[in-house]
Length: 83
Image (cartoon, rainbow, N blue to C red; front, side, top):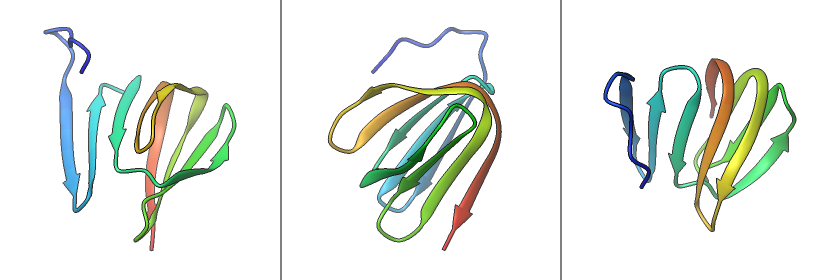
């Protein structure tokens, strides 16, 4: 895991097999993805098996990714869950 800056607020959400850590509106560490469904600089959609998580914003990019974990960076303006 990356070392976090002390002055950045971090929000953690545990949604079953999915775990997200949100650092301000600039970075999200997402654990539990089963695949990327959509990827552009304004929208990233992830499959979790039970639902789809959509991230919206500007300048979005996936900085690192492995089998089920990834880091999204950019200016994040929305997070939506689709059942």
